[in-house]
Length: 398
Ligand SMILES: Cc1cc2nc3c(=O)[nH]c(=O)nc-3n(C[C@H](O)[C@H](O)[C@H](O)COP(=O)(O)OP(=O)(O)OC[C@H]3O[C@@H](n4cnc5c(N)ncnc54)[C@H](O)[C@@H]3O)c2cc1C
Image (cartoon, rainbow, N blue to C red):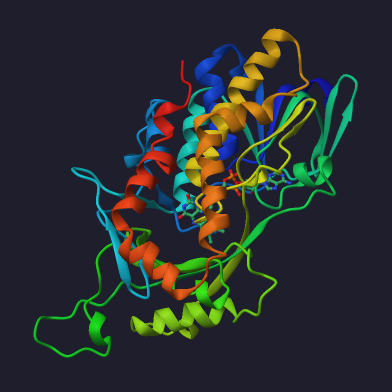
């Protein structure tokens, strides 16, 4: 292979939302750089990615500002989001629009990759990066199909990515455990008939987060979302545990998910259960070394919920601005990348969420969870609206 064909100014490792967002933002703010960017993705689109696919408003705003309309992707819109403790709590609706949009990640990531390609970004699929080596002229990226050379490398390779493991081999990692199951939807129950599904026969509307596992030292929640798979209505269930209470005695995650599904008339044993870790944000997490930036789960997702799609899209915006500035100043140290992330609207929401995580999960008593989700409702909603959500529209854009 000709060495020159393997040289690029920017190599992005990983073609998930963070890598594709970095490339799309670079093309948007510095179009002359687009032809000098290469994304290396180990899988082939449409590739499977374990994820419930809940897109919050901030994700849609970031995409809209890139001129992208996510309603082109098959989706289910949810009008009500319930944050419950033992099936009772607060209900969020957003006037005149959906509260959450649910996509499937194979379809969403494939769509985003097509958009990037249509804007001149080169993506090589089926190439797995094995090693990353810095030298004085740039970065060498070794793959299972040749060796590449770049001025700048972006590690967008997810929670277990090789980039972070190469540049920060010994740093502590905060990782959540997550299990997910897809089932058919709640069965339709004709009015007046009895149902084996008890009180929920006929189903329930909306997306549900229930924090009932917290007093059992599971620092997280069980979710139940509507979704679709190849156009067929389905339900996506799962359990999320930040692992913050891992020093305490805990039941098996699977047991608690099975308990909640059984309450709603589903037998977990009838379905395939899958698990994947999520690396979550902490202000301690390192983010860059000279010539190498991390984005998305490689830096850290939202610790409260493990919400990471909007966050990954936001990191892409910040990385693109830092890369454009690096070329303009011919300074590839990225010494202030972390402070630029932390001071940005994305950094502010991540810091707030990290703080909340460290308060609400260790205060695991039942009475506190009831107070939080059932009694302090207006305060919780106002705080979330002001300090946690609505950061997407405040991100820099030119
Ligand atoms: C069970 C579960 C449910 C979730 N539900 C939600 C949700 O409802 N809403 C939400 O917002 N977030 C959710 N998340 C989190 C969300 O999936 C992630 O935060 C998001 O995918 C992060 O995007 P990313 O681009 O950083 O990483 P990823 O999406 O993981 O993309 C990384 C990419 O890098 C590629 N790659 C990895 N290693 C290499 C390599 N060596 N060489 C080349 N390519 C490589 C991978 O193939 C992949 O395409 C969930 C996560 C899990 C596990």
